Amino acid sequence: MRLLLALSAALLPSIVSSFPNTPFKTSSQWVHDSTGENFTYVGVNWPGAGEVMIPEGLQYQSIQSIVSKIKSLNMNVVRLTFAIEMIDDIKDRGGDVTLQKAFQKGLGSNGDKVFQSVIKNNPQFTASTTRLQVYDAIAAELAKQQIYVHLDNHMSKGKWCCGGNDGNTWFGDTDFNVNNWKRGLQYMADHSKKWPNMISIGLRNEYRKPDKAGSSLAYNWQVWYEQNKAAADIVNAANPNILVFLSGLDYDTKLTPIPNADDLGGGKKFRLSDFSYKDKLVLELHNYQNSAKACGDIEGGLWNNGFRATGDKAVNRMPVVLTEFGFTQADKSYNGVYATCLRKLMPQWKSGWTVWVISGSYYIRSGTQDFEENWGLLNHQWSDWRNKDAIAALKGMVDETLKAVNR
Ligand SMILES: *[C@@H]1O[C@H](CO)[C@@H](O)[C@H](O)[C@H]1NC(C)=O
Image (cartoon, rainbow, N blue to C red; front, top):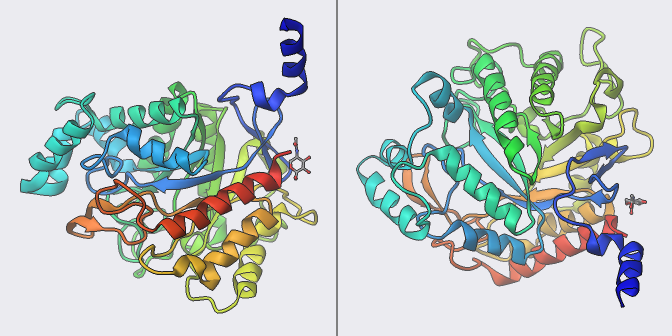
């Protein structure tokens, strides 16, 4: 009996292999765990970069119940967003802010009431728990349920993203201090070393051209390269184990010159071989072509703007993850051209994705408190799915994507 067990264990490594099998690395267009198995990102965005700078939903549900919802879809990763302002507070303004103060600051006179709901649902927290300790608790619960963490620097200033005049568009914009950004990334890369399920970090969400020229650096690929290379070096030095995600221009819809090492301007080219940690680099794109009339329009654009890095003709052959896409859950959009198309393309391209968004409402968004999120997979109280048919379709996308790359 014992011999048989040992034998079957040897024959079925994937069944007995243990979580988390980190660190991950890339090999050509694949992401591999530490045992050499393929890993494909299939997950969801969990926002934490709003004014309160605490991951959303905790005034309605426990962390455990939210993570269980994600787990029930068989997802394997959460793209957990944060704002650099949180680290600025830690470094420059006397340390991390407590939950109570964070809600007071973010929500004004409603802050205490919402804070009370948060600790009622999550009694492990108290008035002196800090924001970063909430991130720690979320990472721990995700680990417990065998889900990975991908951190995403969503904004510098904590607030809803993204617009051309929100001060967070591009390096040097009003609220996009480049040094603070690099310091914040370094801090989170280092801090997250203690999370066993931490696998990767996105350097910045959705670069975009500022509406008005101001203090920003020039909006071009050369600056993109210089800044991202410098930040990636810092992150890799702080935590050499995690993958580093590079996002593109125009709201992360374009990484066009990267796959084939085209001229970025001034003769500069992106070459994987210029990175000593080239097996840690991943590209990420977003897509919100929700009104597309034909899948071919989405497919051609996505491929030409970056997914071709996964193809066998790419000079820089790398994994590409669709880290944001999404649509309203309030109607039958899940059956429309856009949703159906991405549901087909990701398994076809054997590429990972994280959908926007595990939410039902936000603490505050664009000035409105308890903001209803129709694109959220959950209802307003985060207690159940918003649209069961849409969720069934999403679960199908999870299954098909995993099937495409796992033996
Ligand atoms: C990863 O998936 C691809 C596509 O299915 C497959 O060709 C490759 O052999 C897989 N690699 C491993 C290590 O399983």
